[in-house]
Length: 251
Image (cartoon, rainbow, N blue to C red):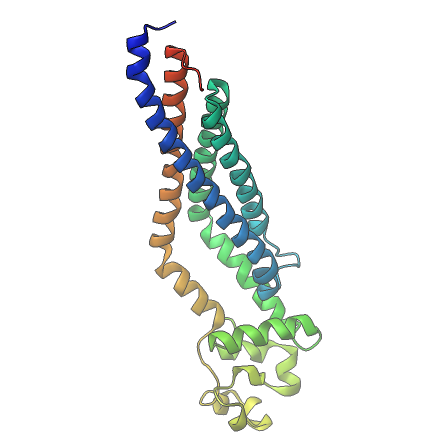
């Protein structure tokens, strides 16, 4: 056993570390809730928005849901381990945070490296929706929603519709019109006339421009969250070491 004087000196340090680690774990738990909510929203909204339930589907929502759920569980575990003052639990918590840190770094770097491939898959998915616009109600709804909400038309621009079966029959969809009352069937079947009545900016171009403009901010936030794990690792290891070395017992 450590001398009483040493234990009295150590107790405030451990109490301080406990307070910081519990606060950290609660923040960590809250980030898990946010990730889980974003993942569920992405599954419900984004996949239907881009009609990605097809062969061009993405696993991103599932990754967010799984990551968020894991963070919630281990965030609570971290609070429990801190309150119990169990060295092996704290070490296990630190190990999980280390794995999370490495996984987030790999995911962030991979996302940056393969961003062009991700954009290409989204582009193919949206092109498929345009090509099946005349035959699929789901594709029609998705495309109309995107064009009306983003004030855009086509993939790169409104002329993309000239390559679709729908254009051969009815021309450009009315969801591309700035003012539907001014878009006659004859105008929508003529690209030259339609140029003055429809949105000329492509939907894919608009979305990717916004993504690229904010890429630096997104990368900074992502790596900031990843390095946030280092604080938890440091606090967990320090608390575990103090409890072990000084044989501190929680009352």
